[in-house]
Length: 356
Image (cartoon, rainbow, N blue to C red; front, side, top):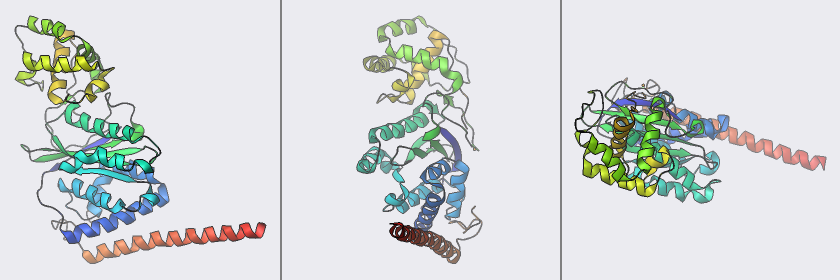
């Protein structure tokens, strides 16, 4: 289930090396403590909460409201998790830009440590990205995708898109354990400060449009084009997020030819077809409305920096001494619990010997 969306102003720049190294160390201790006290599934649940994630980024000391909080926090978590997967059962794949496109290969690389087929996780990763880039058309282009998962196949996603015109970024959160399907209201909640026109092809009220879109997708293109040619004049409502070339006969025929050749079983299968992106889904949705009278939805699925300070000096410059103290304190807690656990194991072994 998609658990939320957050909008943040686009900021350039990156975390200085001295801060990022501390972010990794502190993130590592936080991961270990949550796993120890609550289990790895709790981490996935918390990461899927946009407010908890924002608080975590602030505690780690990054700029409290910029787009960089998402990418830097995920980067710190990914590097912090390396080498301790055997303790945490937490695996992290993906990242920003080109790294995000390596997510499938990174998931597969953990295959020998997983109890499930990694292809299942790869599909979930791709579909979460497909929904937010093609099925929810809100003018934000995805450029960051991070997939968190366990060996048993539980997962969460944190991904972010940017709108260069508005200078805003939008963060999307997913929680796999609560997901029923990818095409009917997978969004549980959305937090967004900047609003714009949105075509939501996975809204619950758009179910009829999805069904008729599927019918169009598996019908022979020639039959559909006959219906399109009957439409001489189009008077589309201004509220529609539809482009003028969505009914361009040549482009439309190419789209229908591709879907007809693939014969998708349902709308999710249609959406999963390689090469079927925002424009193709939008064209089919418009056809469904024109031919079958089934309207798509335009409902938008959308909204602790005082711990150590922030990179840009807000609310105050990062307090390095306090930061080091937090890392040391948490590390002491983790080490103490390990010692206690070791003592317990020794005691049980001695008790077993005594009983025998």
